[in-house]
Length: 513
Image 1 (spheres, helix red, strand yellow):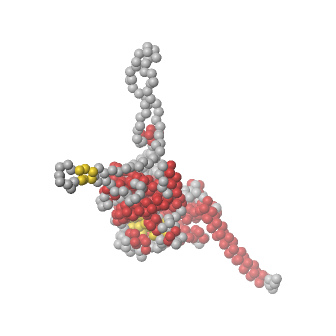
Image 2: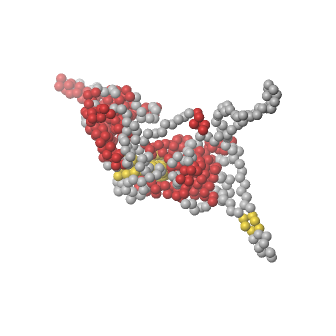
Image 3: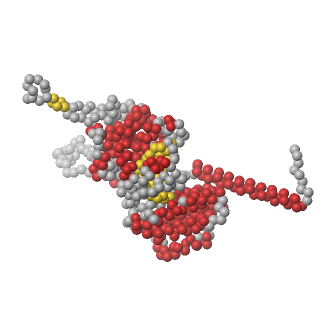
């Protein structure tokens, strides 16, 4: 092995030492970056999937670090008490009495075997009854065979010389020809899968216990046919209603379809905001790609409202030239939180400060008081904007952020203009949490069912997600609502869709919880 050339003099030796020091410094920086990456990956894989932080993690700074950001709150010093929320939630009671009162009531009476007086042996008279106990009783599901007969009548007076006049009563049409799957069976299958996330193979055992032989293939075929024949018109009507809203949430989640030949396809989810929307709607669209063109296909290029979304580059003016785009502040905060949770105190001081500043934004937003979008916009400009300005001043002042912190800062700065749209559009929410909550059931179903075999199956899933999630947003019983729609189609193939919208008063009365 050739020996390294020895330095000839002190000057060369110092140069070699300097070069080696630079190499060591570069290697140490690389090692630190890899450690950070490893810590974050371990946290993402093994830690709890939430963004809550220990309060101690947000108080590990000297006060002088935040004096500049606190100055704008000096005028509010006397208002430290928590203001009431602009929409206080009714207190939920889980008392035993209230839980039992909401159930159908069934009385069970116990009488004396011997009604003679034990003292004088004369017959006694009932004077009342005492409530001894109350309990919930489960009635197991069961199936019956319904035989549908149509009565036929013959006129005894017409046509005395032959040609009998016969009239037969009309009956509902079967949901599917040559199938014993009824409206209630299909509604149960769909509610189990798309509301409770019970896959078809597990439902096989449930139906067998109810003395009905239904295999996964039968259920899948019924769901696909039912979605296409009965629910697609309603789903299309809902997305048309959604396109008329001033603000919509939008997000996407991966899904595997075997027949597509791709490792990933996507469900695109949209929903209306919780506040100021005309109606509460969730809409799902299946697409084999994550291309931004899907956004234009769903909302149409003429959409002129605002889209609340994450930082994915597919959401842009190229797809919706007339739309305005907001950006989810929770997505901006998330990488800072990952740094706080995944790193040691030595390495996360600046990330922790960023989280602390954003927490003030969320807290102030939560306690705004308003009744109209204009009032909300004015309140935001007065109370929230100084806090958001402080956050951006802080991250813009971070000198030479390293590695993951650099990525977090770069992402926040890239989306700054979109975030500030909340001060122009009062209806625009601060985050995209609403649509992510609507997507969450589909991710649970995906984990349980793993994949869809065909594109038709994936499209049927999207239609059922739309109907089920919209029903839940409007506080409907999913089973009752699906059964109502399916039953209507057994009587007529041309429904007045407005009569079956989730917010229709009659639907609310029949299917409301």
